[in-house]
Length: 106
Image (cartoon, rainbow, N blue to C red; front, side, top):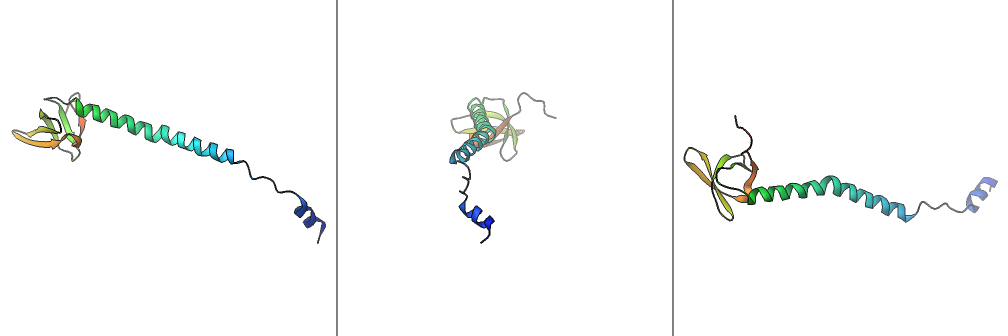
């Protein structure tokens, strides 16, 4: 054996780092993910729920399927929307996604 191999075998192994640094990085990753992904999604869901609960006659809405209409009647779980002329559709409140009452349509 050479002198170098004896020194390498005799030298104590350096610790690869404490376990705390790994936990801190995982916690930091979770906080960043919550701040940029989960928090905005919850806020958007609350705004959508508020919109659906505050529907009233005359609001202009769009369904998930892309049907534009004006609210004609609101009940607990469904909404009657006027689509074109006297054509009316009854849809579930959960299928309404937008309110275009404030914006001008072309």
